Image (cartoon, rainbow, N blue to C red):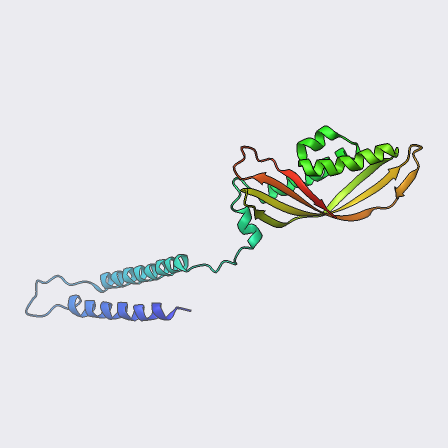
Length: 221
């Protein structure tokens, strides 16, 4: 169905055509040599005007559509902070955080101090080292069989007064965790039981740093 605008404009075009026909389509007796517009020519002109009118309406509608502001949903406070971090990409960060979670967990269970020093802050390193030393004193070894992530999601982001970005990630993972004594007996956990564990880790990076590497600065269950 034609829109009201097109109908009105077609009426205008029709009136123009009618006037053209009256003026150019007749030949008064007193002007026998005047050139008149044939009916075929008038019809062509009418069709041309109609086509141009419809084209103009279409272009106007498209322009109006482009200029109409889109009602975008307001972004969250967390996303607003993330946009201020130079070179930040959420997908890449989550992938890196998942990898860091597995590497740090494995290094902790294996008492791999060198790896831990590269990936965690001094305060976190000291806490992990205390646990490692206590296990070593008790002749306890830890084993973690990582199954999968059920969730890895950024739940908080902020920039502190030292111009450092801090991002907290909630990890929900499935693991098998056991502690064994020096005789390889299980003293804690169940090697046949898969646990669903929730951890919240916070990573930090100075905004003016030349590297995109993040450091683990906090761990919570």
